[in-house]
Amino acid sequence: RFHQVPTFGRDTICLFSDNVSAMTRLNAGNFADILQCCLPVLEGLIPSPHNKVVHSMVFALATWNALAKLQHHMDSTLYSLSHVTKILGDTVRQFAKVTCASIIAQELPKEKAAGFRRHEKNKQKDPNSCEVPIATDKSKKFNISRPKFHFLGDYVSIIKWFGVAPGYSTQQVCCHKFSSIL
Image (cartoon, rainbow, N blue to C red):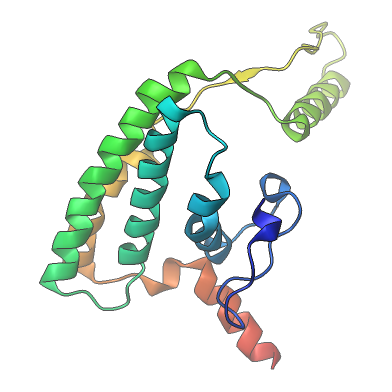
């Protein structure tokens, strides 16, 4: 369904590939485009008890992303970012508790193949290991106990102390490479 989303502007929203979940080497701009187009694409795909949770989380993520990548902040934008960060934390926790608890996620075929290759490589290094790779798909759990989620709460104070960090965005590196090619 992402492929049906029309382009917007010359460099704003580009045409998506046929399979967005199989896209590799995504940069910050790709993630932002996916977030901005995600709500209409997900419309009607998720059963009703989880639909509201997912839509709330995607909206909070898109809003947080838009506020976080501003180049100049004022007190009002920092307050808004702080408020949206709290909402984002609440919606992600609700997503983990309600939606992820009722969905059994499996390893992607690409991940399964990588695990098999890793096992074969380790077997060549140590031929005495007789561990057989598991033929069934591994289940995957959504884990919010990661530094990425934990440090979202510190983002506003980091901006207050150090200012914005434009050098951390891969989107700008991509634009820099594009302009140097021209």
